[in-house]
Image 1: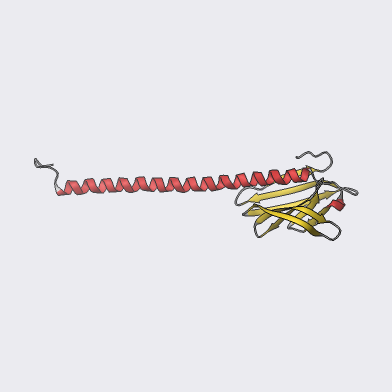
Image 2: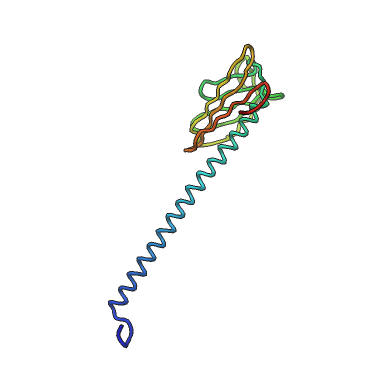
Length: 163
């Protein structure tokens, strides 16, 4: 520094250092924001997974144990009879739908149906009935949304406990 102020070289060095610090701070905020978005997306997927799982288990806990009140669609879902209406779950194109209404188990068709999209980006939906003599003993479900780990449940249809 001379007696009249900063030299041109000193000013350029200060500008370069300030610019470098500015770039580093901006890069830190960009990375932080990207991590925040990823964490938020993962959290939303987990919330959707657990909400879907809870609704599915609730439906299964109210389902009839009689095999004539069940229709399994191989690899894509099922329809079961609750106390006053039928409920169906269908997996297609990575989406999980829930239908309610009147289902004819003999003809395997819906007479009256209201359908709702329950979850998107579903990676795994597997539902199997464990049969007894003339009734369904339990239903085993596996469910995964997005990149989340699958969650499983076994719903007993006689004493209605979830394990």
